[in-house]
Amino acid sequence: MVQKNGIVDQVQTPGQEQPYSMDRLSEAFETSARRWELIVYPSLFAFIILAAYGFFLVYSLAKDVHYLAVSVDSNMTVLASNMQSVSDNMGQMTANIRVMSGYMSEINDKVSTLEPMLATIVSMDRSIQSMTTSTYIMRQDISRMNHNISRPMTFMNTFMPW
Image 1: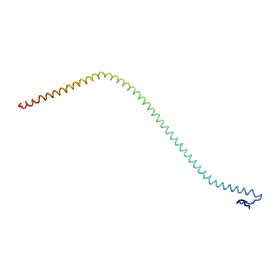
Image 2: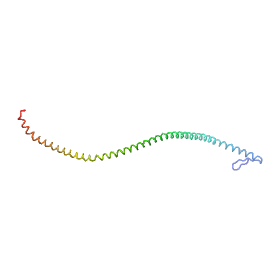
Image 3: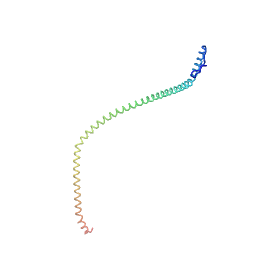
Image 4: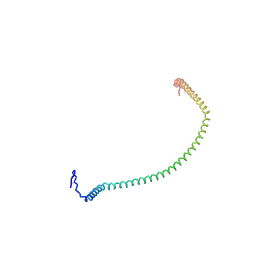
């Protein structure tokens, strides 16, 4: 054995050199392979589990999107029929508003015939105000007359036997 820089080397004969280095290479490869097996196989197993879970998620998402598409399709059919009903009702409302517009023009014509009557009513209002004023003046005059007559009559009533 020969020692160089702290490394022990066996002195090999020229015929022994190759099998020994092949054995060493084989052992080094086996130990390295064992280390890699401890890392790679569990990693590969975890990857397979994650891939299966990912496939399950994608499958359930596709199934949910399918149910959503079916639901939206059925709701769109109902919505389309409702929109048709709204369109029909709008047509009826348009026709009714046209009829109302015709009635409004007739009402406008009839109101315009009432304007001479309005002038007459204004004249009547003035006459009634004048009558009210005259009635108020008459009330005041009768009140004064009652006041003027009642004092002497009170005195005369004391002499009357009845």
